[in-house]
Image (cartoon, rainbow, N blue to C red; front, side):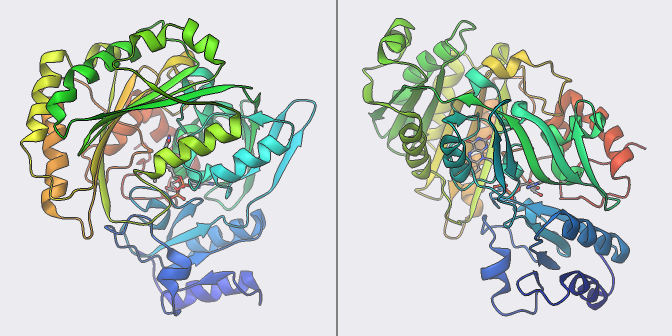
Length: 468
Ligand SMILES: Cc1cc2nc3c(=O)[nH]c(=O)nc-3n(C[C@H](O)[C@H](O)[C@H](O)COP(=O)(O)OP(=O)(O)OC[C@H]3O[C@@H](n4cnc5c(N)ncnc54)[C@H](O)[C@@H]3O)c2cc1C
């Protein structure tokens, strides 16, 4: 990929024009540690350059250097891609545009729309929205994930059944496209590009800032988790079935977000309800949850986010590790029946996982996400009610551990016709990945790609191919 790396460096250094800290190249000492900083240590990445632009003009000029010298480009926001896709995803020679300097934030107090720099991490976005009038929006709970890679791929969190995904909140963006032009995109400007950016932006440009609609923070949040310590997955199969019955109820209160997490010691059910304790009890959910739930507390919005982040960190955190993950999205009619669940959980007990660090998360989706028509944005999992995500972490990661996840996936697909998964849970080994990630929107995405990036300047190992 690319020719004449010194010509590329001359081009990029010309943009820097003597500014220090603008770009680094592989020969630089501590390049990997200080500039590349891969998140998944199982995937080796060697970008040709990492550039830290100060503004959109810098990005436009770097993209022009890349196209002139035949290099591919990927943006990096929080750097939390499971496949290190902001760094080329294992394909050498990509130019990484690190958005660390894009931290701008402002709030329009009339429309309550916020403008958020694309390098901001979710933890900082939460604080900035709170300080700007007690506002909030939907996204995941890991504070180190970047809004750039998250709100452009989906952005699912415990409040998504109530408010939709992060990308459902985007009103407008500024984006630098493959021709090196700085554009605005919204429902009324470059609407085809705007459609594709909401679900597949890494294929179409570098977003520099988002304009998003916001909500008042809920005043009360009820949170709890209940731990079932059994040491055997088979012992929690009936508990899982009861949880699955609850989350697949079409009338399930949208203020409720929940996960069922299978781990080496048993299982944990977590729940977040955006309302008061009285409203939670009135929803009937506590009576339908298996076992007795330990109420964690009745929290305010910021405490609730911190609590969810703490829970999440028990599994995957900001810490770089070697890991692998597989996942699948389910429509209501594709959920596995109780016989299948018992069979799969029993099978899980019988397997050597090759690591003590494994866990399987089942999380509820749907609600407000399903209110948006399937073809309204490139995101294609609006008809799903649940995802499963499995993880193995190893130091180093063994073939046995990866094999366990492949075989677990095989056990699941024996019992369901479900096909496809969320592009935010990158699985570098996935066959037909674009079809699995973007489903029925993929062909339209290919047409949009042909218009805006026919030469595939924005590329990763599973990116959208332009239409013929
Ligand atoms: C610990 C952890 C917890 C997670 N929790 C959740 C969760 O609760 N809900 C959920 O939905 N997902 C979750 N994810 C998945 C996460 O949303 C995706 O990995 C997301 O893509 C990460 O974004 P990033 O900016 O941190 O990553 P990056 O690696 O920086 O970017 C990921 C991809 O997006 C592209 N990209 C980044 N910024 C831009 C931009 N400005 N313009 C265009 N393309 C861009 C990159 O080129 C790359 O291809 C989690 C991931 C981790 C590791």
